[in-house]
Image 1 (cartoon, one colour):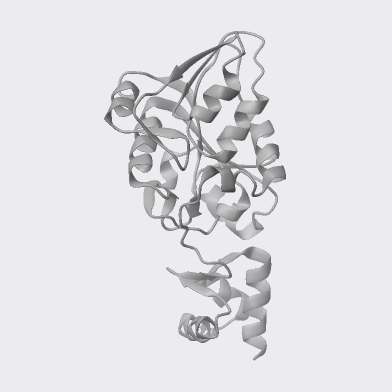
Image 2 (cartoon, helix red, strand yellow):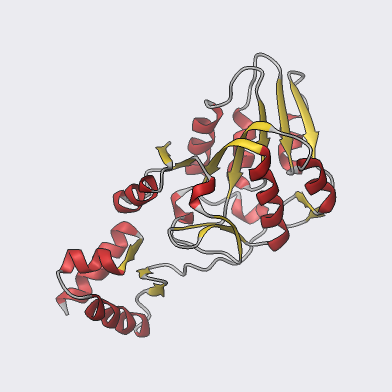
Length: 250
């Protein structure tokens, strides 16, 4: 059916579309689109999501950081370089865990004093030899899969500090579900980080968009900027911007 072919072609380009988008594109009712999506899902050609569809499975399982750091390397480095430009002289910043924010640490070269608070052991090891950087390493239990700390010790410290910017990575960005990660305790720590920073900057390559993971971190109204790559579709970019978020293409 030509309509089914059009749906698959649009999804190939946009990665994720909502039912209402497809209604406008194909000039048919939502009932018709939902029926089409059910048929295409039964054939194994797409995944239905809440209110839409995706070509890729929108639900993410946890992967070790040594695996994740080999994925979308060029995109992550571009995002990291763009994010590094937002760091001011004598700034105080927080860096969460994950391979994209870990990449950010490679491009931090302050000429003056910089304070970095982080949950990531990998970030600490990247910055440890720069004498211009004061590092506050959060304490707690270390997660082997991410090389980051979690738990009440880290949360207690975060409840008693404040910084100008938080650079945070995520496993999923979904228009309805918000931002998410694969670990419940890490999501809890991330929420504490959000409360301790004045500006929240999300670093995520476009493969994360349209995805959901096990543990929700926050809704879109709690973040200020998303830095991603040019793989984000124009439709999704516009919808995120309508939520009041600055979207920067690295």
